[in-house]
Amino acid sequence: MVITMHYGVIPSQAGGHSYYEFRIFFFSGVTRWVVCIATILFVLTGCSLHPKDRFIKNIKAIAHKDYNISNGELLAKYNLIGFSGKNMCVFAKNYGDIIGNENTHNGFLKYMPKGLKKNASLTNKIAGKIGTIYDRLDNINKNHHIITKAELHEFKILFSHIHSSSGSAFDLVSHSGNHNHDLNLLAKVDKIIDNIPVFVPFTDSIVTSKFGRRQLNKREGVKLHAGVDLAAAKFSNIYASAQGVVKEIAASPSYGNFILIEHKKNIKTRYAHLSKLYVSLGEKIFQGQLIGKQGSTGKSHNDHLHFEILIKNHPVDPMGFIGKEHSCRKAL
Ligand SMILES: [Zn+2]
Image 1 (cartoon, rainbow, N blue to C red):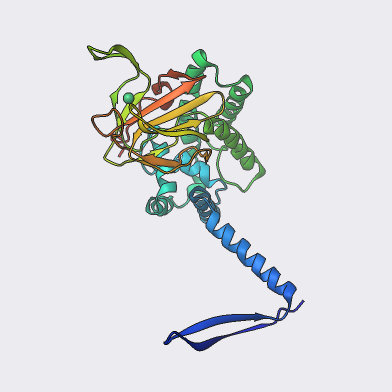
Image 2 (image 1 turned 135 degrees about the vertical axis):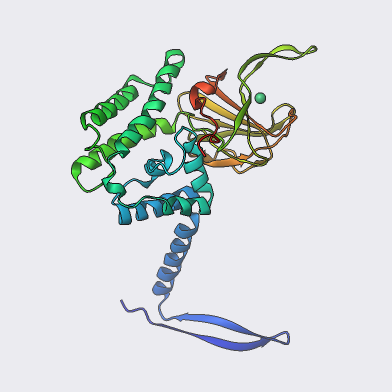
């Protein structure tokens, strides 16, 4: 099929003003439809890419081209290149922030060390980070049974593989079949972690009030503080602690503007006192997604995030999930 068309710029007059009209002539009706549909598809795929997808696409391409590394998402999420920070707050720092901010994203790519593919210490980094998460999940499981036996088994397979490869064979390099197998193991465990709120919702925060019963005032007596209060700089970004679906968005006298996300395994997370909300009801959320900004709406004296984790609608202490390394300040 030969597509024949010509186009030209035609000057004309309207309302006393001269303007230029850009016209495209097609000789075949079928061709016109094909071109139109192709154009619409091109525009839609280009514009509809979620910031996360765009980032992953970009980092995957660069990681693969320059470093022979096949899973950019894991690299960013677990900060496997380790250019900043050592503790678990790197989640928000290197994943949520990277996805939400083009400059950080470019900085992340820029700081990827050359010759990473020969870096055997990646093994220890992976083991350390996944190991910390595993310990937490194991602890949480003693009370809440949120991880199935099959899922715990996946962790154990990964660990036994890391240990048996004694620090050299386990790698993210994609060249040999073995290495792809390693990545698959890591990706399986990553999918489990995606669904558990272990992601710190802030980049840089301090705990200003812990979970538990406390004396609010004489009139109200002792009440349960059903979450943990985290405070960061004014209007700091807030990221989803796990993937899920937005179940509720509301403004209440106590919570102020809040978002409730429903995760798998009967888990929900609530983010309260927000100044801005970037999600809508029913929206699917990924772990680390920018969902809002810190504020002081509702019953709140200072800017902070009231963060709750509910299991079967009962609040539990979030510190068991996000760990005490909630602040990146020491790491920076
Ligand atoms: Zn609170």
